[in-house]
Image (tube, rainbow, N blue to C red; front, side, top):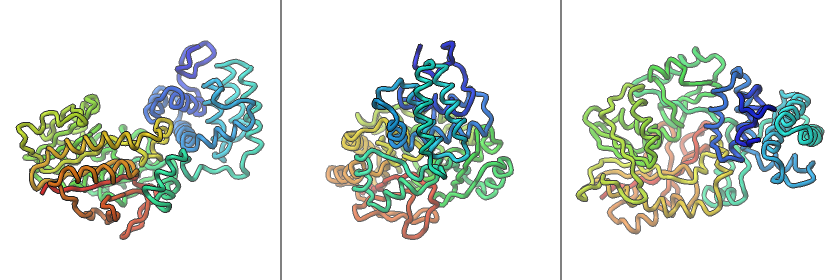
Length: 465
């Protein structure tokens, strides 16, 4: 029987019949097949027939399980005769999600978790493994906390913890790993010119079960919990809001794009910042969105149409920035007023939203990314005209990926001068002594930020003197 899907007894893949089964499917695909949690979860939910409440439970189980996976493995492994790695992979996925429910979800009856987990494994792998699951989970249930509660922090490998401590210090590391409720909110950016408080009230009326708050980092940000499928909302369809993490919005604002500017958005991805810049440059400006993945770039034009932004303001180019500027620096005459390089990185600053990356990242990655990021930054600099601005950003807090990259770049590019921090919005983020601006879910000198947001980023802003 194929292990690509958790399947029914007949061996045919079918939609999940319960939140627990769906969660186990997703954790299996992420841990054993290398799938991305958000994509795997969206795919399973879209083809299931689960009610919204059950879909929310499945989401909570998936992300909760991935955030504390090492502790869950240790918990149920105490009742195994062999290491968890030797288990049938589907059985292991079910044990992981069931252990999470037993240890962290107070509203879930233990007998329901055990009985359904046994039924899932028995149907797929037979009564022998079903019996193993029964015996193990009953022991886990016996040691269940008197008051199970959601985990209060992400459990990371020791080397990741040491990297965070070395780069952020103890207080910021604690804030990154522990400060936010789980799952974190979805960030929404309100269309330029609209009153976000009016938009927030409209969203609250349309989504009575949701929680909507104003972001404190970006003046155009809303934070949404339990919002369901945002694509079905009238405000989304009308282009009043777009999905963009709050820290990402702040970075776009930090570039300080002006009307008529020529802007290069490097490593643009799906174009969250691209559309922000396109709003700002006006009719006579231009944004060139660059990414290695052409499929991501193809999503930008439909988004421009939805937001009511003229597509002529944006050009897309598929370029490998580690190898060169792809002709954008033709004739050696840089022509961009502002360039943002949101460089490829380990992504360790996004641990709360993307806990599955902990299954992929390895100790050598920060140093490996340093070489890639330095080459990308060197090529990005070729595009900046005299007097223009270059912003380097990464969604990772490690020294190797920001402090070390930008120091090496400055030594080789004396024409670029590091600029001091520029306050934006309600929170004035101040660069650290090493000249790197670090934003994240921690207090700053002028404000106590909402503990739910943003992710952890590092930025350095240069001027081409």
